[in-house]
Length: 106
Picture (cartoon, rainbow, N blue to C red):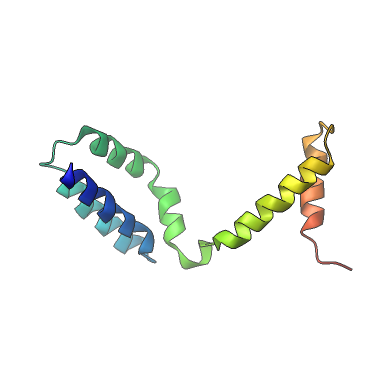
């Protein structure tokens, strides 16, 4: 149980890397440390990370990191618009409303 906790905590360091090569090297070392642990869920998790590596590598690039406050603010605006437009079934109209909301005021 202790080993699983330590591996979980170590994996969290992956998100701190700003270069894909460094992140990949860290992940490969982390996956190698699983070799003798016999933790099947972690091995399955490592395979999933390997399958989705392109998206994870894109996150490592500094220009792709977005502040969570900005994302939460956007989600809040979209929820307010959805409440105001209750009863409308057209997704394209909602999309246009969201895009219009993001424009600078005239």
